[in-house]
Image (cartoon, rainbow, N blue to C red; front, side):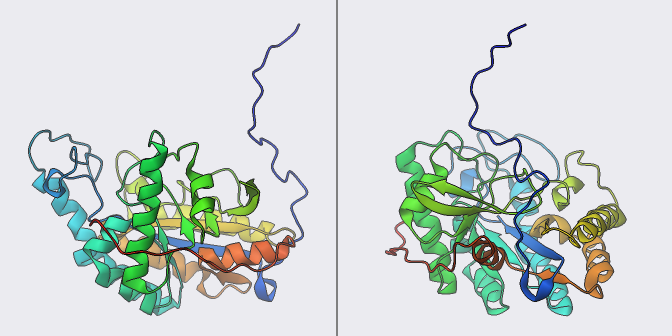
Length: 317
């Protein structure tokens, strides 16, 4: 029987059972990436002049035609109460994280991005608004990238080198990042436990897979997490498996957090228990994503890299 399949450019095999012989700094078995998503102020809102209100938060509810004060208040919790808790916990355990920040959120609360940078965290770009880019016209997406870079550079003094779009990218996103200049990696993939390199517009571009399972988003919208221990137990189990595999092959673990989610008093203990579980383990590299991307490039023979993005003034907030 002949099976007629449309050709696919997708890579279903990856490294298989032969990953590159990359060793993390100081012989670490596992690169652990804590990603804190900073989206508050970038959610769609009629009060900000957007075309509609965001409707995905602690609940799912559409308020159409008028401002949604309930939704806006849920988001504001992240900057008002969630960030101080998360910031203090990262300081206590000496963890340097990647702050995945929407440009409009940074432009709205530049003090938060400045605090993160002062603490030694990486501030990467999560787009301009908290929205998907899958169907975004190319010219508009190019402008989104520009505004996001400029907002982060204005608040922190350093342009972002990482990118992560909410939901799906457009077919143009990676090419536009390379054309803009200054981007070392993106996190818009979910298909592996190690980084890999894509050739984009003739340039090597690092992809750092993200994770939706070891992620506090599962506390919301029937995601399966209810108690703080649900988050802690799942992340500890994922860590233990990857740590064991890291004895013979490079492994990376991503833990995704959100200011308004894990920052709640009934949830923050899950992050605390996870950090306590791994704090005394030898061979764990708590790494920012830019550090992981640099290490991977060096490990696979691509050497170092320095950003050269052109920066102009912010035209819209």
